[in-house]
Image (cartoon, rainbow, N blue to C red):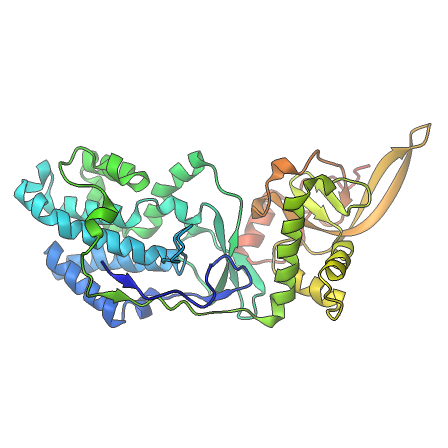
Length: 396
């Protein structure tokens, strides 16, 4: 089918220091190979050009804006999600169009069935695209601006990073296939599909599992099998250009090191003197202590602690540094001793670690508080991340 040309110099997208330029579909589809794809697909679909543009071309462009340069998870060839989907969808309709015509649409309107088959082949598994990763909008230097929420529409901004996060539960992902499809598919296309209740039901099922969705049709439903060998003369451009800005590189290196330390020994959390506190909704990290440990262990003495700290805080993975206090009983009479420290909070919602491995929740008093809704709008709108998660100001 349509070949991808090699891979980008950065390899895996989850080298989290890498900054990608936001892809704009109008520019992408101006390239000759994408124009050729659209022309070849139109010959197979055979509906009036204005309808083809609104139903098919709009769908392809909106999908390109939605998935950007994300790679197929676990693919050693680093194939782009967009390219695999386009190959599958074109290959499938090329294969099934004669069969649909020969069988008079299998009882469905032929044009509508073809649209259902193409769009489902393009979008099948769309909920998995963001199952274990997150797009973070940033500036050219890699500094955090806001979190991208796929349900709100295509990626907006100029640059982004891709961060690994804990994998979403299967029950949750099953719900997101249709929700994300509603973001991508043109409204007129959805309305057309929904006019046929039976076909729409099949289509929704096919978004999660293509073979299950259209199992009653007497055609081959293995997308990769039918796409193989179709359109070998077309080659997608697959040069993914990224850069690793020095303005945030030390912060990214520290974050990667910190995540590794937590994965190697979670027993450090809540241990006296560890500088790690599991609070309600987040992990509190005594940032100065851990940066000093990082500099010492990684032999990066030439890097100033304040530089690492400033770059880390610019990544948007934690709250701003804040004063905290923790009380515990001591002595025979159960007297309370109070310790104060400076820490940052990394919230569960960031998905950077498994909360179940953090041990019991401890009570820590923090300055500055944010409600759940305030935290949401800070992520969507890019407001300053100064929050305290689920803590009571007078905790003792």
